[in-house]
Image 1 (cartoon, rainbow, N blue to C red):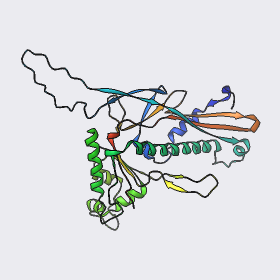
Image 2 (cartoon, rainbow, N blue to C red):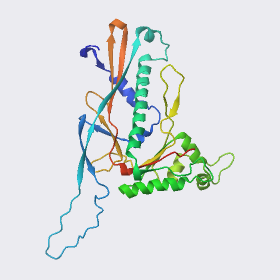
Image 3 (spheres, helix red, strand yellow):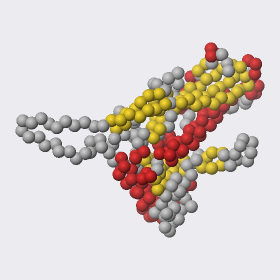
Image 4 (cartoon, rainbow, N blue to C red):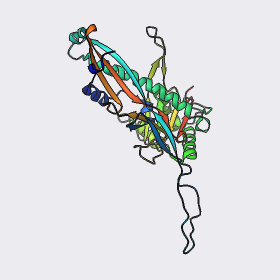
Length: 315
């Protein structure tokens, strides 16, 4: 490791890493970002089922005092962990690169892409561990079974389950692109959407139409894959999200007393920007520069009742 004094935070690379999107990921849509100043701490949990919906007697006799009332708040804990990967850029690589190629930037984005993929795998694992029992089901008929599959019944089942468990209405749906293509081709969906199309201007079934059909704010389609093979061997690709579909209530802004399905606490200390920091240092013995990408976060489901998992929607 280099001497600490030799390590510099590269704010230009850090800012650029923040600005450049790295594809569409389901975890980013379901885990609300929560900037935190401390790596560990507590957060308040508001019980959405009991909070303000109990039918209590509020009558008051003349001259009598009003009945006392309050709501219950419990606390949960979070612990943000650091995640890092590094790469080396030799002087030969940098100096011999053609003009459009920027080795330091490309290595940085490569590292961040690796780390975001890892976060996506973690997100799927954490969601599946949290959404069990009444918050998940595997309906008999899949959506690519255009005779028996019933996406309306399945998605409505999920939406009703979320409302029954949390009193919150789901506003986001996340699904893999293969599932999405089967969904938009399903006769029941097409019959509700396609009308008035012509050869020159055909009617289209897209994410906005699906969102409107199911009264959602956003439909997120992902196609990220992970290679399960050992490095150097033939790639063995699998889709991270498989054929599962997730619906959840995800607030646009995380705020106090705001029920939230899942959060991603991101540590904003140590010169990081939105939980990301890029470090660079010189390694004279290797005649090269080293770049290291650092991300601080935790993935945590805070209100499992506000989400639902429909399993295996493709045959």
